[in-house]
Image (cartoon, rainbow, N blue to C red; front, top):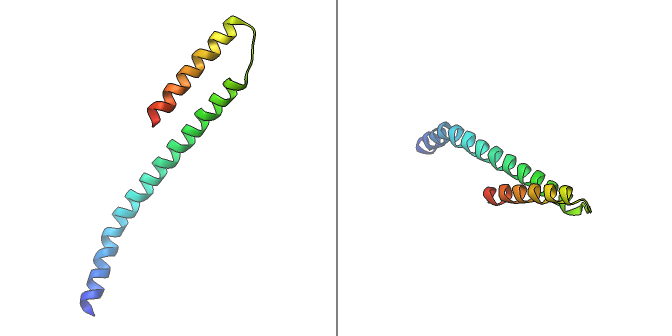
Length: 75
């Protein structure tokens, strides 16, 4: 019984570090997902725009290429 209690206390002591690491990893993952969502929304916005002005079209194509490169880099 004492052995179980000691093991539980030891687990709790190291659990805080692993819990903090888990929370930090989860927060990092959430931030990356939100960034990726924002980039995808920007991409959809650009794709939905139709224009006849060649200068505007070139700017949209450039922006689209940059956004797609950022999405690709994020994995």
